[in-house]
Length: 205
View 1 (cartoon, rainbow, N blue to C red):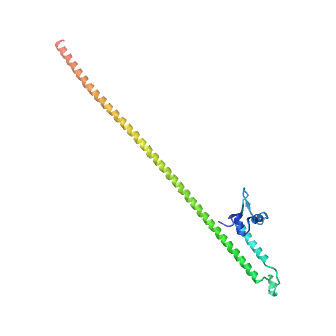
View 2 (cartoon, rainbow, N blue to C red):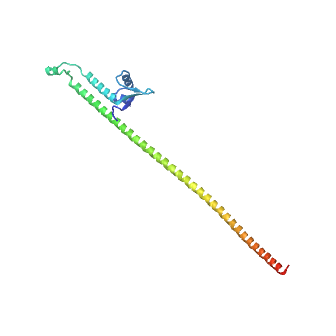
View 3 (cartoon, rainbow, N blue to C red):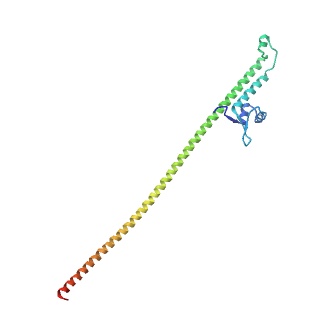
């Protein structure tokens, strides 16, 4: 992410500026550091603005350490640079180096935090995908169970229907057998009646 777009909180700004949170609030109220506040009153700052202010404050502190002494020689007078004791010059250089080191360390830490945040987001996305996959698997399993249950119920119904049809077939066979016997009996009776009628006509009885 572009540092100009990155925003940090009150304590992050305090850590970079190497001051307390109250001092950061005062800087914001004096207009020395641009800030934004949400509905809850929480401060946020542009990382680029905080780094720029840190550089300006470091430069001012370095200038305050330098005192105006006598200008030695014409060459020094033409350069308009104040005379600075060598020990203090070394101390200022060391302070500048220390500030640079702290700034680089904080920048590195912030980069690590961003990387961890991005990794956490990727892990969250992966977990959501896994959850969705598990939900889909669970849905498929439930659907399969319902399908199996439905098929078993249908199989049971068909078996019951088959038993009913077998019973009806047996009844029909019994009725057919009874009808066949009744037909045979009726045919025998008709034959007897026909014989009687024949002999009656023959003998005039």
